Amino acid sequence: MLTERQSAILKIIVEEYIKVPKPVGSKSICDSLNVSSATVRNEMANLEDLGYLEKTHVSSGRVPSEKGYRYYVDNLMKPKEMSGEDVLKLQTIFQNNSLVLSDAIIKSLEIISEMTNYTAVILKDNALESKLKKVEAIPIDENNVTAILVTDKGHVENKIINITGSNLEEVNKTVELINKLIVGTPIDEVTSKLEFEIKPIINQYVKHHEILYNAFYNAFNNFKDSADMTMRGKNNLLELDEFSSDARKIKDLVNKFDNDNIVSKIKEDDSGINVYIGNENNIDDDLTVIKTKYNVDGREGTLAILGPKRMEYDRVVSLLEYLKEEIEK
Image (cartoon, rainbow, N blue to C red):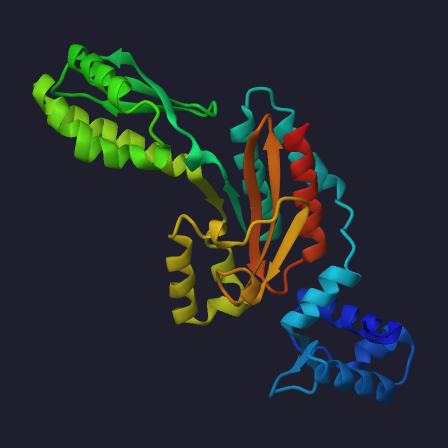
């Protein structure tokens, strides 16, 4: 454990660097702690030797290391009290009776992403373990129907599909075959089963089989994606100082964000707020991921915020704690 003075110095350096990404010198620390510059420089050197601080080549100041951030989060940080404005924005969403819970969660993530300028993610952890329960088709007009896809976990998705060139009788026959042959299949296996096992059977019974096969294949494919993960503020990180001037880094991050399973790479923890800094998160060494699980009537999910290592830890933790409480009410 660090001494009280070392802890105080580390806390100041972390919080100053979070505000402005420039190395922190001894002067601002002296002013805050009312100690001599020689004492501060000596303690900063000790913290560097212990691995909590790093020195850049262009400045005599120091920046936090991953070890320094970890010590700060585990021992020095306290969740920041939310502002009245932040509370009001989120409360308004959950008090909107016209929004179902899943839509309210997504909307709240959009707001948090805008508040923080970080990337917000919701991962429905058990969505892909769900199995298809039934499919229904409700006609809208002669060229379009609403396909209703339902899982055994209670997740319902409505997809409008175009059937131009076919007819309702063929739609109903296709739905009948799907319900007979695919119901009970895990969501992440439905499209594969539809392509390799069910398509030849549809070909036998439905004249305009290609039209309806493509329509339902796309509907199931979109259903799988929407059941898995939603991301908001994808480009926010790319505009931060850490990444905006590095074209290769931007390309690397974009490629990682296009991988729909990025959050599932984080090791599982079942309770509380979990913070993964740098190489702890299995996504990118320059990122921090803060996440928490929620559970509503047995339906689980993960809320995650992705930001730089100099993330506003205290604020993000408070926002996620508040959001989790609102979801589970």
